[in-house]
Length: 369
Image (cartoon, one colour):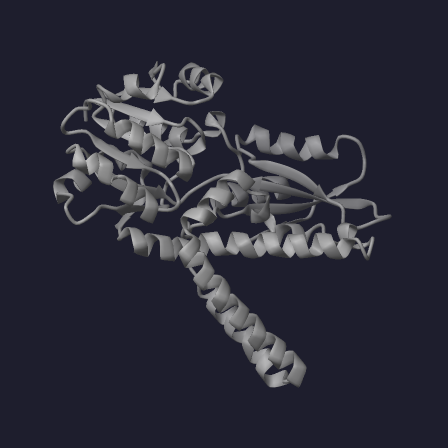
């Protein structure tokens, strides 16, 4: 497809979408704008975009497709700004936010001017942020939710999907309310739970000094998403507050049931509670990408001597296996071996890494989840 695409917000998501469009549509011109001018200049230097717009109005006026890749609160303000501009009559405007109800409602200002807005949410992410972390493969096999209103002609939705074909994502169309309910359950609420566990642990650590030391390893892994951007999650929670209040009330009921089982010392029902959870969790798709980015971790036992970590990463570099994160677990004391945790973008990279390390060294490895 030919045309001009304007990406507002050149972070991980916006940058990755720009790369996907450039890959699929060679004749397209990609313009970009970011409130951080250094990010915009970096995006052009890296070839993520072709042109840098000085402001939103300049980039939007000639665009055939406008992608708003900004925090949800800022997205509302950008939609209002766009509604005041003279845009191409057949322009398609979309966003990438993880809430949709309020954003689509705000887009009524665009509808009033005759412009087409189709809400979007690519359900993918990474351990890294910023345009330098942008990847063409970020959305591959991920769900990409679209929330077109009833008045939107289906040809417009098909055109948007054609623009986004290079993502190799799985497109699903749902209503804005359905979107917010689904993402509330599988993404927004789990982030609240993770943050609450960490907060409780922090308070209890004032009474027991061993807690921070013992809360490494597995505890860090199950609460990993609590390290997400506080500013971003503040906005998401406020945007999706009605759904999350309902889910919190249900969570309270769930915890009251567990509390009652403990008070009654009901061994059979406690067993059944965990058995049901295990069966449902084990039945969830393993290779599907969901609302929360997967963590593809490899655990490597490495000896405690200088150069052991660089030795392992050197093996992976020779095989061109990309690493997204690396850290050392500090759960064991006075041992010769430590545990190196290496994170990868895909399960395939993790499996290749395990085979590489196994073939090149005597270090023991095990897969994460």
